[in-house]
Each structure stands twice: as structure tokens, then as C-alpha cells.
Length: 395
Image (cartoon, rainbow, N blue to C red):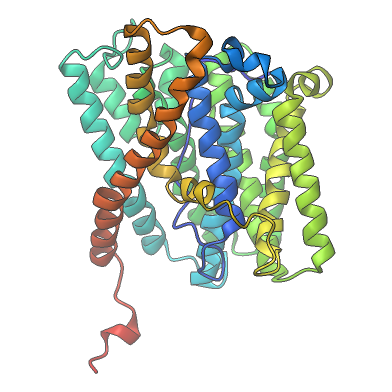
């Protein structure tokens, strides 16, 4: 069963829109649930809900589900990322065989680079200042090497070989997997040229997840953070985007059935993970990615205005800010836990520290989005992407 301790991970998912260019409320909701589970996981590693007085009122399974599904949430997001980025590429190019390499890489760079460079700069400064919880001090690790690993998209490998980095750095492991996938993905699309050639490759990668994880069992960190298992989840999302392009609409009953199947599978993974591990071992990760894909497709094909997630705007807002919250939430978590310990708070009331932590994570993510990621992305795209022909013609 995947390790529940010392792990983290998130990544970006493009602009959040689907093939028609509009945001999808259901997918944003799933993203919001995923990033919320990651934040709860990182708080829960330090202040466990099952050790607070909530255990007297709430089921143990629920408390464990809230605290220990961060790793699974990352794989849900990998599926979403594959679906969204491929859907947008299909919308712009018509087919993956016509994908514009320059534009694809420009969009990825403008989305990823500003926040990533800022995060690495801040973490480096905190290390040099000797701030507790931010100093890289494990034997065999160094600040220059961590910077190279983060910007060279192999921080996951670096941790697998040397051990966990401080939490602020550790979150970048999933970004390494995602960006290496997207560096090669458009090139593979142009080389294969045909969906019937590309699809079997994606299917093989997607269903390899249980075996690639099992093959890495001798190294717990690398098993969690290796490239192939994460890429298998991304490939699952890419396949979903190809299905969505092939069938723009489906009968309402099909979308509903997919939603029920996906929700059931996700419930089993979150609440019955121990039982699934005993019966399926690494196969339960395949159930996770399949369930995530069912929910993504159900959201894509859901009739407009009749979605069951209406009224959950706060969680959808977490989804829209998922990249920014993911990169920055450890600053809040570290500060909250440090304050909790400094005040000698009673563990029974530890759940109360979640109350300021969650809105602060959202506020910090919102500030980063408003003042850094969106303005920087807009400026970079204006410089790196060609002006649309229609807007280039004088009135």
C-alpha cells in the first residue's frame, strides 16, 4: 500500500477549461476535492484528526479518509491534467497530429515557470537564512543540487536517491513527473500521426500502473514518486480526452452511470483503502485512476444546468486555485504546526488548528494567482504566442 507519510505532490492542469474552451464545474469540483485532501493530508501528518476529540463524534474511517488520501489525490489530479491539457490541445489543433509544438510549450512554460521560479527563490532564501523547517540538511543533499533537481524536473528522482527534502521542496515531485510527460507528449503525437497508433501506447502505459509500482517496492520513496506510475495516470486522462473528442455527447443515462461508478470507486479507495490493498495490492491504484476518469467524463458529458454539484462554489474555487494552493500551502501548514507546538496546545483540540489553516491556504493561493501567476502568464503568452490573425488586422 502506498506510504502515507512524508509525501506530497501536485501539479498544474492547464487553464482549467475543457474542449469547448469553457470551465467545467464538475471537473473544478474534483480538482478542489483533490487539493483539499492534499492540504488535509499534510496537516494530518502532524496533527492527526483521529487523535483529537473528534474521534468521540465522527467515525474513524471518515477521519482517516480526510487525513490519509493525499497521495491518491495527486493521482486523481494527474488524470484531470491529462484530460484538460489534451482537450485544449485538440480544441486548438483539431487533432494531436497537428499539435503546434511552439505554442504547446509556450503555454506550459507561461503557466508553470513564474510560480515555480518564485517558489524556488523563496525556498532558497529561507535555507540560506537558516529558517527552521526550510534548511536542507540531510546527508547527501545540498541547496544547489535541490535547485537543479527542481528546475530540471527530476526532484522526484533526487528524493528517491537521497531521501525527503523539506516540505516546501517536496511538493515539486509531482511537477517533475507531469512536465517530463508533457515535454515528450507532443513530440510522440507528431511522430505517431494517427490516433490508432497512439491509443494502444497510451492504453499500455495506463494499465501498467500496478506493475510499475510493484517493481519499485525496494525503495519506498521512489515507489511513490517514480515517473512511470504518475505518467500512467496522466495517460489515462489523455485517453479520456480522445474519447470526449470522439463522442461529444452521450445519453444522459451513460453520463449518470459513469458518475455513479466513479463516485463508488473513489469512495472505496478513500474509505476502504486498507481492505483494497489486502485484496488488490497495487491494483487498487488502477481502480483509483479509472474512477477518476469516470468522474471526469461524467462531468464533461453532464447536461448543462443539471449538474448535482451546484451550491459547492467554495470547493470549485479551490479547484480553480489548485496549482497556486499546491505550491504554497506548505508555508501555511509549517507555520500553523510550529505555532501549535509553541503554544503547547492540547492534542485533543488539535482539530481547531485546521480552521485557520484551510482559509489561509486559500487566501495565499488566491493572492499568488492574482498578483503573480495570472499577470505573468498573460505577459509571457503575449510575447511567446503569435497574435491571432483576426485581432492582427486593423479595423
